[in-house]
Amino acid sequence: MVKVSIVQMKSSLNKDENILFSQEQIEKAGRKNANIICFPEFQMAFSPDSQTSKELFSISESIEGNFIKELCKSAKENDICVIGTIYERSDTGGFKLDRSSNETENKDIDNQYRVYDTVVFINNKGDLISRYRKLHLYDALSFQESKKLLAGNNIFTPVDSPLGKMGVLICYDLRFPELSRIMAIGGARSLIAPSGWVQGTMKEDHWLTMCKARSIENGVYLIAPNQVGNIFCGRSLIIDPFGIVVLDMGNREDMEIIDLNIKRIDSVRNDLPLLKNRRTDLYD
Image (cartoon, rainbow, N blue to C red):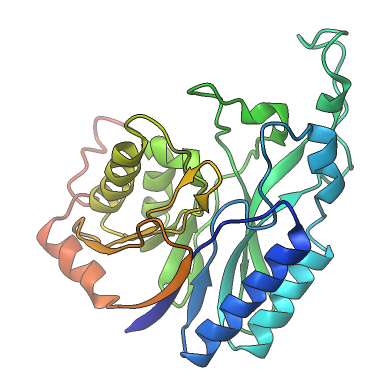
């Protein structure tokens, strides 16, 4: 059995408040001997629509910044692996508009500052093992994340974790089945999907459907910590490899610890060998 802690939080605008809250959850999970704790997207701070890209850039940090250092410190002190999220400054600082592109001269100058929406995986020794920058920006349903965010360009390479080989994706990435499938083929037996799933018509139905589909079609545990409050719908989920909802956190801000049987993955994959039965002679 693996003890998995999942955090459903309402991030404030203040990243100092959010790191303190996060450290409290890590300490609490550590006391209960959890092996890994998973935070949602936008753990660092809530970014309202009224906030400019320049304002968001001002609170962002590099991967070597204090927010990650504090998470690493807490992971080590509490002997627990951590999945966390930050607004990450690009390696070259502010992203400057390419005036030779389709961007127009009268575009809001704040758009020259954009950041990555990044997930980090920290082991129980406090070492930063991997990071993933969100590939698919939520430019849909009246939102336009690309005004503030930069898209990553690399699919996460599955890494060893308490859950076995683990893959990572972020929120809107769930709507693109190719990403989860590539990681499953690459060895992932669990997928972590930190999210800030926005409220709206049919949105909770989409959330549950996407999470269950990605789990069933790949025979993996799908762990999806979500934001709650502000504009987000909550309902953080853990789905087992057969599509059974192990946990649905509703609309409360809280932390839960669930024991997951990793042997269940092999059992389901033997009974429902979807990865094995693919017709790779007909498609790549």
